[in-house]
Length: 112
Length: 113
Image (tube, rainbow over all chains, first blue to last red; front, side, top):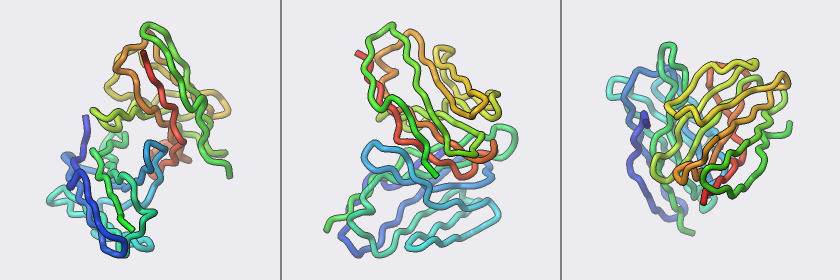
């Protein structure tokens, strides 16, 4: 079963615009991570935010976490055609069930 | 450092056969996790190994099994293949068994006919 649901399922923007993707989850978490996947290849880790953090930046990426709403958002600023990929959130649950559970993903297309 | 490698990259099998997939983690990484990715079910956790011990297992039937060797390399085996086992199988490694940042291999794409 999937912990997270992502919104939107697909997003198409022009190069230079910002892209925002949202993720909701169900259980208490230790951390939430975002990964990128290019066309059926392996996943690339982008950023990790811990449950006691509210916002984190890495280059053109900004992640927010609202544990009260069990939601997170990923903002990619000044998007490039090379950002075209699927983006997944993944949560590491609290407690003994320490497995990474992925959301359904957002397919981002950046048009040149 | 070399990344996570998976072999083979592509595989075609028929129903009822069995298959073994291999994963070599990044040097120094002791934890290996396996995931199945399908269009319908998305990314689902199969199992995790650390120091040759299975620490976590996802909700998959017993036909799916795995093991880890003393050099941290891991294999997963699927017996009595079904059409629904067609998927991209991803392996990920991390330094410890806490499943924080994971580094993924390119995957093995399995097609069951």
